[in-house]
Length: 219
Image (tube, rainbow, N blue to C red; front, side, top):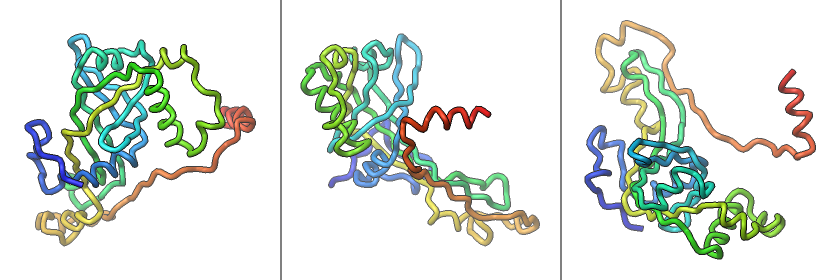
């Protein structure tokens, strides 16, 4: 799997050692992210929208209502910037300046293709549902023609991308004794270390239990 070629928009300039054009690493970030943020210039103003996405080979997809302002902008040919982020924790150091966030991120620039063909659109939506729970498409009611016409699917080619990450492995650089810690920091002694975070899947809640759960939370 070849790396992405840097472009003027994806070329890493600040903290380049944290960056990557490794296609496999970038795809892993895209696949692990449950939400991406998609931005574009719409009606001469900047807009950003959080949306669910899914990747198939060298393309990533989003869907939304056909009447959605962002979806319509891509239908008219607007350029998109897609951002994928994973939050892994905090690194707490002896100086306020060196405190850091542990993260993995990827940025993609692309021009989207609005999927017009209803059969193709149906297949992309099937893939979307299957990514949530394999086998589910076969047991749910299939979308009607009218529902397909109401739903917009946009395809973005993965051709211009870069990744960046601050991982646990680099935290010794800024923690006590690290080369980026200044001499004066040794005079303060707060707790130092890493507070890791992880997104985990919880136990499923059957639909019949949700009303009682909502009532319990509103007490």
